[in-house]
Image (cartoon, rainbow, N blue to C red):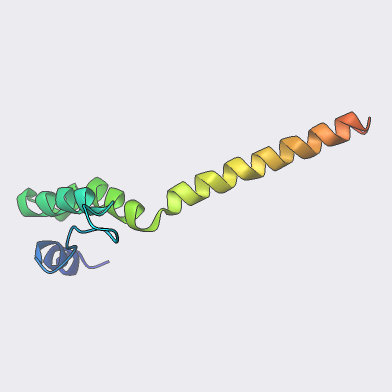
Length: 92
């Protein structure tokens, strides 16, 4: 993890045009602006950790996908348990 490289990238004006695929503001552009402002004003790049996490989550949606998968898995587990209970074969 290279803080200097990240700081240079954040201060670059060549990133994130702000326009979405269908025109208008891109979904992650507000997060990018927050991160860029933090990088500009923070004394220590580590202070921007949460702004960076928000921006990266917006781009890749890993936490969102993990949460959806956990919900689906739990629903399937509950449905299977209900089917077994209905058949009179409740798990021990």
